[in-house]
Length: 111
Image (cartoon, rainbow, N blue to C red; front, side):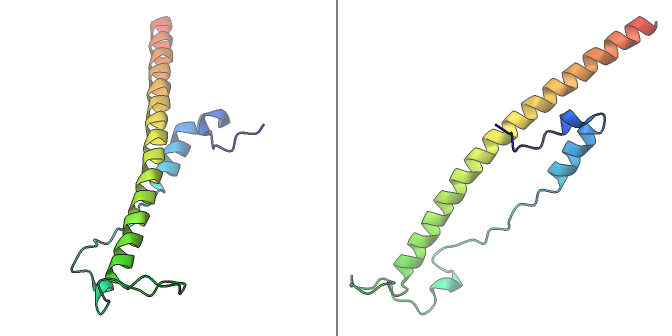
């Protein structure tokens, strides 16, 4: 089974630079605030009576529920990303410690 992850450490000495380049390319989205004063709610009724029509006509309640659902989904994705970032940090600290060990041993043997 192939591993779809990019593993810069498997490609030689440029590994650390590759990781730093990949990480610096990450761009986080700008998240617009949402609340009772949101322009998206202008002119909408608070709610609409339940009907059989689909899709449901826009309302403040419907817009709020959509934003709520979207925020929950995004928070779940961020939770998974945070776990991945923690694993990445641990791997980089292990790499750093390994490099320090090799450097110390090489310096000791040279003296």
